[in-house]
Amino acid sequence: RSQRRNQFSVKAIWAPRTKDLRRALLDEQPYIVHFSGHGHPEGLVLEDAVGEAVIVPPEAFEGLFNLFRDNLQCVLLNACYSEAQATAIARRIPYVIGMREEIADNIALEFAVGFYDALGAGRSVEQAFEFGYNAIELLGRSDAPQPIIISNSRNQAGISTNRGLHRSYRFRA
Image (cartoon, rainbow, N blue to C red; front, side):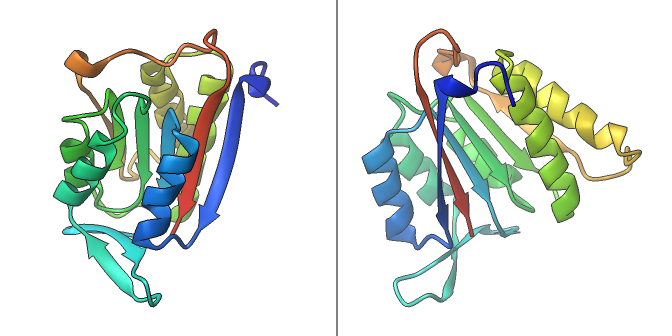
């Protein structure tokens, strides 16, 4: 639906184990990672090798995403209580979006739709964040928990829609 949809390639991985996340990042070298799943005040929830839920602490995500800092420009953590993870990852990645507290699925989804509508229309990550934020407001839910964006000015290279194909990887836990 977006004007520049041909400049984006979106791949999804469902219920990723910790090694699936690492392998997908190695295989795809994405510019954007969208994690949609469960969060906990102590970390994000993935599955271990036997399918059991494991809480991955912020430092582990910081270390993982640091290994992809040459390509990765934006991480969207569409998960409850992901502010600590966003803060840690933002030490290495230019733009990171997270949620301060528990957020309802429909609110998180509406944010994502507004965000990607704007990004696909050629807006900057910061502007896309504002569109996502406004999408929540347009639901009449100004009282809903709001996402946060952390921008690390030392790491900003930006996501230009004029640089060719952008790889986006969506993880759904």
